[in-house]
Length: 253
Image (tube, rainbow, N blue to C red; front, side, top):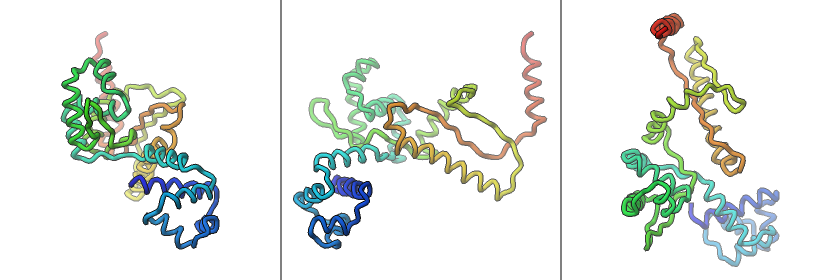
């Protein structure tokens, strides 16, 4: 999406908030409704007409641009598989990338984590080649992605994070008010399996979208881990009980 697209999207959002139609905006601008539709369809629009549209809905051009910027920063950027593979190949580069994307300055990163400046410059060069940043003179750079970067489902980064964090996460007792855990073993038909799998996938996506669209920008938001798993349980209750009994018996007394 180009900057012009974002500006028009922000203006369209203002219309929705005020309950205005294209026809009403056209009346206020003293143009035809077809002209307004062309304006929002992505065709060329002059700065003068954009200013007139802002005046017609009672918003300054500056505020419209600020809205467009906020919406742009809220749009998640999904890494490519190639970018993910490069990042997981060098865990230090991955963490450096994460700090840069979340607006930590180069000097503070080097000072806090005792990273030699030359090493940080090498990482900056790699991120530039990956299309994450645009290098400029004097160790300066510009981010080419928003801060809410996301990665691919079951991609290289997700597999790395699951492998390293899930065992630690599952050691929690899940008894606090902001936690929940229940493990259920049941017999289901293929139809029920398909229905529950789809519902669980929907729940996982809903949690993610709630974070991206609304909650992440609030000051009272917290980082929450959510594990949604569903699959065949290739064991019997007897296997579990016997295994637990054997472990208890093996404990030193």
